[in-house]
Amino acid sequence: MIVIGERISIIAKKVRDAMMSRDKKPLQELALVQMKTGANYLDLSIGPAEEGGEELMDWGVKTLQEVANLPLCIDTTNPKAMEAGLKAHNNKWGRPIINSASGEEERLNNMMPLAAKYNAQIIGLTLTKQGIPPLAEERCAIAAEIMAKAAELGVPMEDIYLDPLILPVAFSQDKCIESIRAIRLFKELNDPPMKTVVGLSNISNGAPKELRGLINRTFLTLLMYEGLTSAIIDPTDKEMMATVKTTDILLQNTMYAHSYLEM
Amino acid sequence: MAFTIPKENYNGKVYEVELGVGDRAIKIGGESTLPFLSFEGEMPNRPSIAIEIQDLPPNDWPDTVKKVYEKVSSNPVAWAKFCQDELKADAVALRLISTHPDQKDTKPEDAAKLVSEVLNVISIPVIILGSEHIEKDIAVLKTVAETAKGKNCIIGKAQEENHKTIAAVAMANEHKLIAMSQLDVNLAKQLNILLTQMGFVKERILTDPMSSALGYGLEYTYSVMERIRLAALQQNDGAMQPPLVCDIGKNVWKTKETIAAEAELPEWGSLEERGIIWEAMTAAGMIMAGANLLVMRHPKAIELTKKLIEELR
Image 1 (cartoon, chains in turn orange, blue):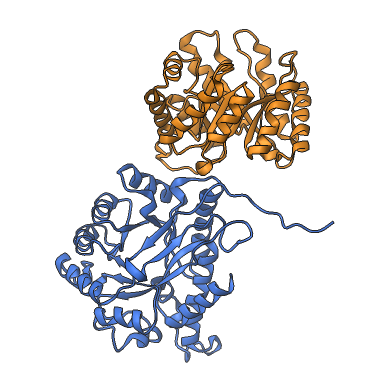
Image 2 (cartoon, rainbow over the protein chains, first blue to last red; image 1 turned 180 degrees about the vertical axis):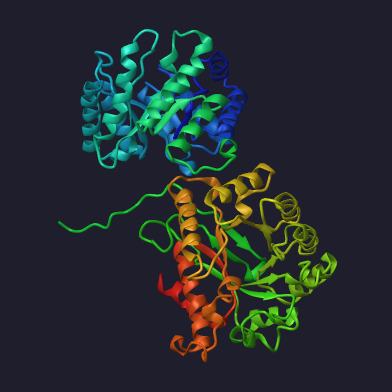
C-alpha cells in the first residue's frame, strides 16, 4: 500500500509555528523521519491559506524537497496556492498528488484543470455541498461525476484516487461499513480498477486516546482487504507500519521474508 | 478497430551496477521491464557474459571444453589473458577452487597473490569466487578483497551463514557482492534485507538464485528468478532489485548430456556439439528469466548466447 505521510499539517502547532516563521528545520526533520520510516509521499497541508497561500506553498514545497527525495501530496483548498505548489514541485522523484477535488462544483472546476495542466495525480473526495452521502452507492455517483470531469479534461483515470471519506466510529458507527463497501465499489467503476485513498485517523476521532491506534490499525486492515491503494497515515507510528506491512504480506502485495518488518 | 498490444506498467526498476574500472568497465541491470520486452520499458544494458577460469587445471571438466583451454589452463594468469585477448570476454570469473579444504586447501595469502597477478595482466572486470566452502571462504575472500581494492570487482559468494564477514570486506574494499541463497525466493529476499541492515548498500548487491542446468532443475531456477523480477518490477520491492547472476558452467558441464561418449549413445550425436548446445540452451533459459550476468565455460556456447542476446533486440 502507498503511504502518504500525514505529519506536516498546519493543524499541528509545531508545524503551524514553523510555517508562520518560515523556519525550515522542523519541517525538514518531519520530512526526513517520515521518509525514513516508509512514506511514499509527504502530505503538505497548509489549510485554506487565504492570505499569502501561494508564497507559503511555494516555500513549503521547496523546503521539503530540499531534503526529502519524495513526491508530495499538496494539500490546500486554495486553488492559487495549489498551483504555486505544483509549479514549485520537483517531479524528479515522482509526480505530485493534488489534495483535493471533490463533487462540489466549484472545487471540481478549480482543481481538476490543474491536474490536467501540471500532469498531476488528484484525490477526489466523494462529497458534495450537502455533505457525505450515507450510502456507498451514492458516493459512487459522486465518483462518477469526478471521473467524468477528469475524462473531459484528459486526466487519465489511473491518476485519480477516490476517497470515500471516513466518519468516526464513535459518532457514526453504521457508516464505517459504508466506507469499506465504497472502496470495493469504487474499484469496479473502471478497468483497470480505480485507485483509492483514505485519511484514516478520522475513524477514531472522539474515541478514548488509548483506543485510537487499535481502531485505526484494525480499520485499515479491513480497507486493505478491499484493495485500498493508499492511505494518509503517520509512518512514524511503528505499530501502524507493522500492520501495513503485515497486511501487505498476507494479501501477497509484497514478498515474504523473515525480516519483512525491517524493510 | 486497430489492435493495440496490451501493456503492463511496472513501478520498479532493477539497479544498474557497474563492474570493473576504466575503459573496459561494464554496466549490467537497469531495466524497467521484464527481459527483452522493450515495448513495455527500458532495458539499457544487454546481459553480459563472464568466462569462468580457475586456479587449478580443470581436470574434472569434460574434454570437449577442457581442450579449448589446454594451452593456458595450467597457468591461471595466462588463462585470464587468453579470455580477454583471444576470446574477447566481457569479464572473467576466477574461481579459487584450490582453496577448498578437499582440494589443495590453498592459503588465503597464496590465493591473493594469484588474484593480484591476474588483475595486473587484464583490464576487463573480474569476478572473484571462493570455493563455496562456508568457513574457508570467509578467510579467502577477506584477503583477496583487500588485495583487489580499487578494481571494483565482484566478490562472492556470500551465503546466509557467512554473509556478515564477506559483506564487510566487500564493503570496506569497495567491491560488488554476490549474495547466494538456496533456490528460494523468500530466502533470497531475506539475505538481501540482512545485508542492507548491516549497512551494505543494496545497489552493490548481485543476487545468485542458485543456477541449475537444462534437464536438471532449470525450471526451479527459472521460476525463482521470474518471481524475483516480478517483485522487483511490479511490487517495486527494493530487496529484490539487484541484478541477477547465473553461474551455469559448473552445472552444465557435469550433466550426462555433456559427458556421455558418442560410442555409448550414438543416437545423441556429436558430443562436442551436444555440450555446447546444452550450455547455450541453459543460458538462453536464464536470460529469458532475467539474468543480467552469466558465468559460462565454452567459447562457442558463449558465441551462440551472444548472438541470441543480439537478435532479441
